[in-house]
Image 1: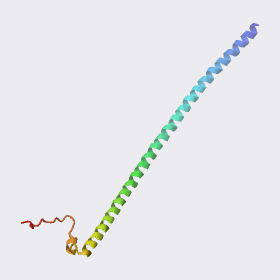
Image 2 (image 1 turned 90 degrees about the horizontal axis):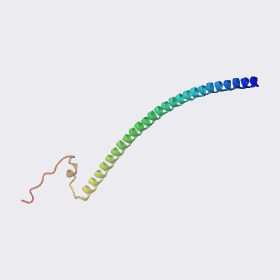
Image 3 (image 1 turned 30 degrees about the vertical axis):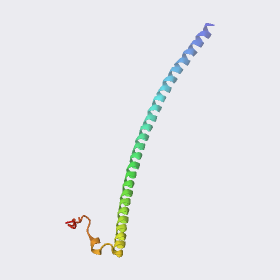
Image 4 (image 1 turned 90 degrees about the vertical axis):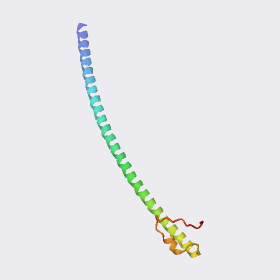
Length: 115
């Protein structure tokens, strides 16, 4: 009976030792796995930040280009409208053709018609 007790005791010690080593191995593996996951997460985050910054920069460039194009288009349209209105006004005789050629920034001097 003592031999069996001694044998079971030895087996128990072996199992406990194996469990402790297994636990240490699992803890080490978990630690390394965590390090790896954190590394991948950090690199992924850096990549996402870089991508977002690139997309934001490209979007800003495109928005600026579009606004410049819109302003240029609006300027061209307004010039054509003014030219058309000048033509209509001149053809109806409401204004002399020479009066329509004033440059931008010219100021009309008030007349002394009331005096």
